[in-house]
Image (cartoon, rainbow, N blue to C red; front, side):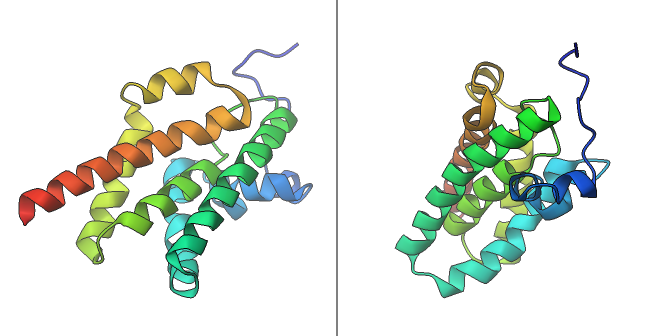
Length: 167
């Protein structure tokens, strides 16, 4: 029997390549970072967004995000079960999807992208209410994905407030 702090499987590259769900859940390997895997996962969202956004209409981009969220529920659930930890810190697909949503609504420019990144990481780490509630009570893949969508919402509200204050 294991405790909630003890993993059945220690994630590594072999684990990631053992199933496509694990590779996706770990953000193509970014979640294997020894320190701050969520930050590294969030950074993966930048090149993904920069590649996809100019190639897709706004409506299609939103549909891709919805699909990525739904797939994320499954891959994070499957990977969490394989690890023996429902919300392992190395699973970063939730950060990637949520931050791509943030980037979609972020004003253009380096300042805005950097501010969006800092705010998103803040809300994802601190987990103000109700994020913390859902993080603690919703389990499995949906719980993993949902709290980051809430962090994205807080980020977007802050960005909108700051933008309106500057104009």
